[in-house]
Amino acid sequence: MARSLDRRSFLARSAVVAAGVVGMTAAGDLLFMDGPSGAVTNGPGRNGVSTGKRKRGGSLVIGTTAEEQGFNPSTARFDSVGVMYARTVFDPLAVITATGKVAPYLAESITPNAEYTSWTVTLRPTVVFHDGTACDGAALLKNFEAQYNSLLIGLVMKPIVATMAQSGPLAVTVNLKQPWVPFPYYLAGGVGGQIAYLMAPAMIAAKTGGTDNPIGTGPFTFDSWVPNTHFTAVANKNYWRKGLPYLDSVTYKPIPNYNTRAQALQSGAIDMMVTDVPQNIVQFRGNKQWAYIDDSGPVIGEPDMNLLLLNLSKPPFDDPTVRLAAAKAVSPTAYATIIDLGVNPPSTGLFVKGTPYYSATNLPTYDPAAAKKLLAKVQRRTGGPVSFTIGSTTSPAAIRSATYVRNQYQAVGFDVSTTVVQQNELINNALTGKFQAYEWRQFSAVNPDLNYIYWSTTTYNANGLSINMARNNDPRVEAALQVGRTSTTAHARVAAYQKVNQLFATDLPYLWADRAVWAVVAHPTVQDFNNPTTPTGAKAYGMIAGSIWPTQIWRS
Image (tube, rainbow, N blue to C red):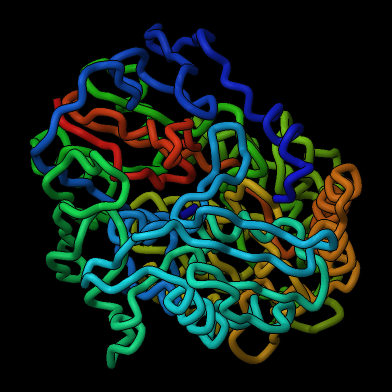
């Protein structure tokens, strides 16, 4: 299918690197859990972390799973591919360290008041955009205002932001309507963190918002973009992080078909690829011909989950009995084994064991006989069949998954059809409510508040644009989310997100399948692709949900 500061200590404990721990593939090859953040790798020299002397020059071609719709952080969706695009030409204001802490990046400091109702972001001095203009407090304010007034991110900011003002030559102060303890995590630029990336004022003022001609401060400058073909950027010779980048250029090639992407890597047409397809993972994990990492090891917060996204504002899933029948009709264990080859662990909710947020819930268990009875009850009440359409992307893996799930639902009496759409259209339809059920993958986040926009009743809209795409309008969920957002007590925030997970087990806006595992595979000459650093040289968090940093990569 297809961050509060006092919370850092126990977040760090959930991401202890299991250095030296080894496992075995089915073929008996050694696997290593030796990468940053506990990444599973192909071992020393094949793990995206190099101890060799860095070399300058060369190019890198990366095969991605999909295409992004543009580069403007206030309008683009920035999924896992978009985050990599953004990290290429922009810089985030903050970065997540290897232990889950927030550290300044383009910002020099991010400081709250005592009540967490005001945050001041101060930029580093002397940084300039690619067009030579100053990256200063005035530019920062223009970016925050563009995000505030944007169609998507504005829905996040307007309910909580009271005022924003330039408070120094390099600073902006954001005043809030309530405490927002995890605010710095939004400035780290992961999925859902578009506000982190700063555009040059000229880009903001451009007719199209510069969405096809980005101007940032990042390690590479824009060269060319032919949508669905390639995006190429060249080294920023005046990058503010001295000595970086090492590469002369980086190119991204969207290759949605996982077999074609793997063949491109093997033939040398690309140097590196991103995948979340178990067939690829089985193919490359443990194969020492390739450098390899995946995120199946310990995580901070929550990983991506494969699931069926339901639209609770439309029939048939506006009926709780139908949702319960659907939840009992498919076995996550069988799904993980048959569709995902046993690579992806079955899922029972938002969080996995080993994170502080995990707790057992009363999630319905697989019971096809009970599903049939529930469905028969609905059919007697409505006088007709319960029908719906499952949508998926066009990839062979997604189609195979959708077909399997359709067959399981049909076996208990649902009238189910399938449809395929391009990924961009799939996301647009989810946002606008033009779907009944979608094969979906989401929710990877270092801090659960990063998913607030997807779960909140404040972003719910039954008949229009809704970032709460499941359209689950449960005030109890909102109450728990507010505790997670505003409480300065770590224990209270953890309990709040456990409550959210428990409520989802009864509301059933998401029918869980299994934990998605993302992997990056590269030619062994591609070095340090999982070894990002903060501006002070500390280790940053490595690959998250298929997104890596191009800044420090070099070729041996």
